[in-house]
Structures are given as structure tokens and as C-alpha cells.
Length: 241
Image 1 (cartoon, rainbow, N blue to C red):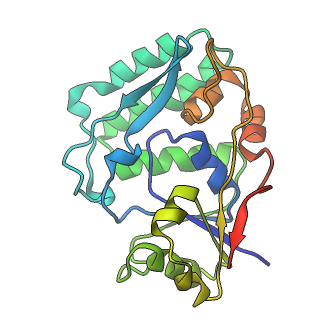
Image 2: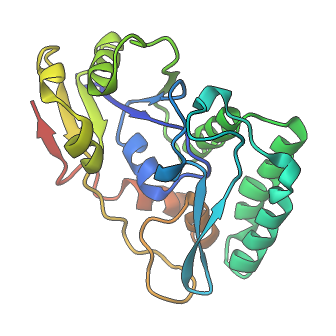
Image 3: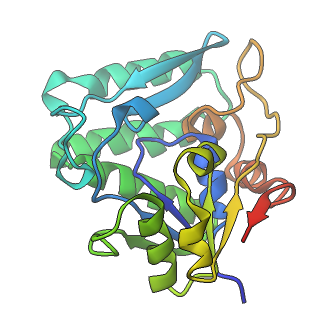
């Protein structure tokens, strides 16, 4: 049987394609022992306010060279109350605002009280959300897995160590970082995500296709959210060997 493994860095309140990729995999390896890359949006939450996409940035201490499993969230900057105000302003009239509030606003307050690390904040939210949406795959930390290797060779070795058959990745990463020889040498396939989010009810303005999971659960039920995130399965996704 195929065993599909995706390797993804933690992300605060991740965008929809993030969940789509994990939910089309059997294992999510949380890549939490590498450098935090704020430029790719790991600390950014895309939301829709008055029909326009806005990004809320969760402040993390240190520069871009801090490792994810060592990064700290700057709770002292009082971003939690600002974040909650933004959620209320953006989604206060949305049909499933109470679900959003209990899932995100209460969650942020709880982790502020715990002074949770960036890694803990991200991983716990995504894990809880995946389970709520019905995904029962395996979640594994990358810490200690093939840590002597770099880039796509490490991804291939992780898949091999976990007895996987396929690595599931994204198009940009495939173009920029994947060397197929690392996978061929281990008799592994590579599946590249190709997903367009189906349109769902949003606030006014043009449909925005890849906002945070928070936008989705504010506007549709959890059952409907799951259907959106798994729509189309892996139809149209390319496989390489």
C-alpha cells in the first residue's frame, strides 16, 4: 500500500492549501528543527476584512536565523488583544463566528497565559484542527530524523526512514529544491500538490482562495470545511519517479 508523507514547517493559523496537503497525506512530519523563515509566511495570518485581504503578523523574537524549536512568541507586545479585536471586526457577523472565537481567540489567550513557544503554539493548533476535521493520519516531529542531510536529500531520507512510498510537496518547492535523484535512489515517488480551493461563502468582495483556516471556519460549518479542504482529492496532482 502507498504511504504518502508530507514534510511541513509549523505555521500560525495556516492557510487552506496547508491543510489540503496534509489531509491528502498519511503522515505529517513537522519540520520543526530548521530555521524559522518569516518571509514564507510562517508568522502571518491572512484574513479578509471588508472584502479585502489583510495579514496579521504574530511577532516572534529573534531574526530569521532562529530555529523553529527555539523561537519565542513576543506576548509582551500585547498582540493577542489586537488579534481578537481584528477577528471580531472581520468576522463578528459571520455565521460561525462562535466557532472561530472558541477555536482561535480563546486559544490565543490560553497560550499567552502559558507563554507557549512558537513551535507549541503552531503544532497544537494545527493538530487539534486536523483532528476536528476528521484527519486521523500520523504526526511526527522531524527532530532527529536524517538531521545529517540537507534539503531534498533530507526529505527523501525522512520518507525512507518512515517506510513511506511517496513524498507530497508543493510546486514551488519542487521547482526550487527537489532533486529527483535523491528519491529515485530510494525507490520513492514524489507527488506535487495541485489544488484550487473551491469557492465558499465569504464576506463581500472578490473570492480570496487561500486565506487562513480561520476564514473558512468562520463562514461554513466544520463539516462543510472538511469538504472544501478535501475537494477533488489528488485529481490533477502530478507524480514523479
